[in-house]
Image (cartoon, rainbow, N blue to C red; front, side, top):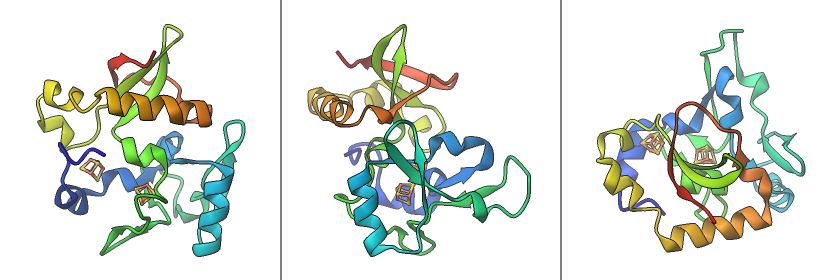
Length: 165
Ligand code: SF4
Ligand code: SF4
């Protein structure tokens, strides 16, 4: 979805957003019940836990080896040589739109940019925000209607791109 600004090669070398510091576990991707059931059949070793109202996320709590808040643990769907093993149909919406996020600003739903992707941070803001076109917005609206659990809490490092409605 973001191929206009992010290449597979860039992400293959980086993989920053597929590992999670203990203090950043709020960022782990959200899965619907149907998505979780489907992935559990194919990847029985992947563990999930409930999150938000009716959704699930990866359970990597046992992967940390220390109590250091900055220790990172990888997503169970990250292969060290191939990157994410999920197909584009299997990939959770959070991962499809990263580093964009959906959040409420003054009670209005907005698309925001998470400013931690090292590649996106080097691209002019106008070019990055141009990805959020009508097609992107329509898809996000559909996904929010399907599962409001993809709406994140506001974070200080978010930059507002545009309102959703
Ligand atoms: S942080 Fe950015 S460059 Fe790195 S893997 Fe994620 S999307 Fe790709
Ligand atoms: S599901 Fe794939 S893209 Fe998403 S965090 Fe896990 S490895 Fe990365």
